Image 1: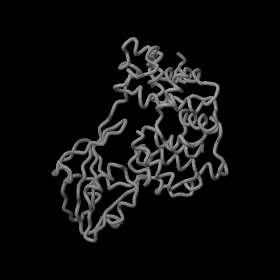
Image 2: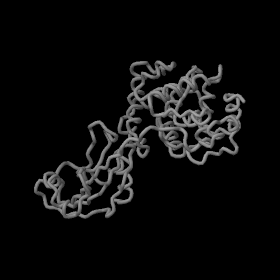
Image 3: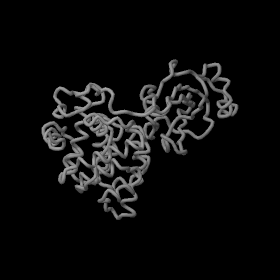
Image 4: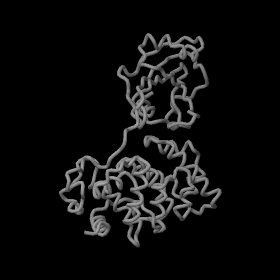
Amino acid sequence: MNFTKTLKHWYSEHKRDLPWRKTQNPYLIWLSEIIMQQTQIKQGLPYYEDFVANFPTVFDLAKAKESEVLKLWQGLGYYSRARNLHYSAKYIVDTLKGEFPNTYKDLLKLKGVGDYTASAIASICYNEQTAVVDGNVYRVLSRYFGNKTPINSYQGIKAFKVLAQNLLPENNIGEHNQAVMEFGATLCKPKSPNCEVCPLKMKCIAFQLNKIAELPVKSNKIKVSKKYFNFLVFISENNKTILEQRIKKGIWQNLYQFPLIETNESLTEENFKRNQDLKLFLNGREFSFSLYNEKEIVHKLSHQHLYTKFWIITVKELPQKGIDILKIESYPVPILISRFIDEFNF
């Protein structure tokens, strides 16, 4: 059995009908790869279609305002991807005169593009001999070859890249890369892989040794920290509220949020009323308040869990410049804030 030929045959019969598989336009391939990072197809596909509709070329994306890009991205998470996408579009237009990089080495110069994305674009669009290695590829190769090297270690990253590189055919590199990824995404899945119909099972070491659930191997997981967020949802007599832009670097950089008080533990209503940060923010203004959600909303990120409460604060006038509540949905906000806005229905 030839791994590559078997995989190619399987792919020809089982690949999903996806729009970016009907083109070799590097801009569209790049767009799909950035959107689909850490995102399931069913969630990412509508975003891809919206981006293509709003920014059909790299020139359109480059001249857009960052706030427009972030608003369109809203709900996908990992907002640095959107900021890097916009930054790189401007770099391609302004510095490269609109000429998309056409080699793996030059693609790596784009902000937000690493080995995986550069390999995908270079192989799919330019047939360059460079293997794609993502979570799906790690899983397929570790199981098929019985490789127990931790995939999130330096040794693992290097070893699996070499292994994937050695499996490349002489031609149709992009098709091969997509085949391995598709195989991992739809058949050799993390949980409940469909081994019974797998065309590779007769030579799959993990299947033969009943080690499917044990591979791939990951070293110790990142410790997840807890944070307690208290968002101040102001409503003034003239129907205005406050949104603040997060300027500092972080997951929500340049997005908007309600004023935030971060605490070391969950606040009761009495502790909230006495909170010094709240008093400083209000600067002596009279107010009334209510807690929107008795049970904290837990927003889970890769490295931290946010235990969140929304406090509705009614005041005669705002402590700082506000915005008309009717315009609140025009601002790009984190999905946590977006869901609240939809539910609260100002």
